[in-house]
Image (cartoon, rainbow, N blue to C red; front, side, top):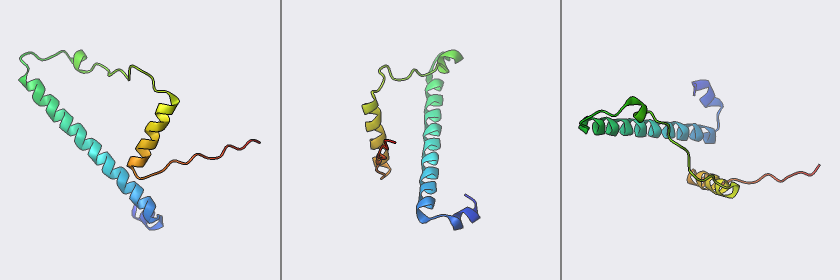
Length: 93
C-alpha cells in the first residue's frame, strides 16, 4: 500500500490490508517450515525417491462437497476472521 493510499483509506480498509499481509507472511513461514522438514526427511533417506514421485500432484477430496457443506465452510471461514455473511435479498423483477 502506497503512502497516498494509506491517507485515503479508512481504518477498516487498512486493517483488512494488514490482516492480508499477516496471513500471507504466515503462509510463507508455513511453506518454509514444510520445505525444511521435507529436506531433513529426504536427507535421512538411504535412497532418494524419483523426482516424479516427489512432484506427484495431490488429488482433491475423494468426496465432493454438497452446496450446503460448501456454504457451511464459507460461513466458518468468515467467522474465523470475525465477519458475518449476509445473503442479499433476491429481487423478482
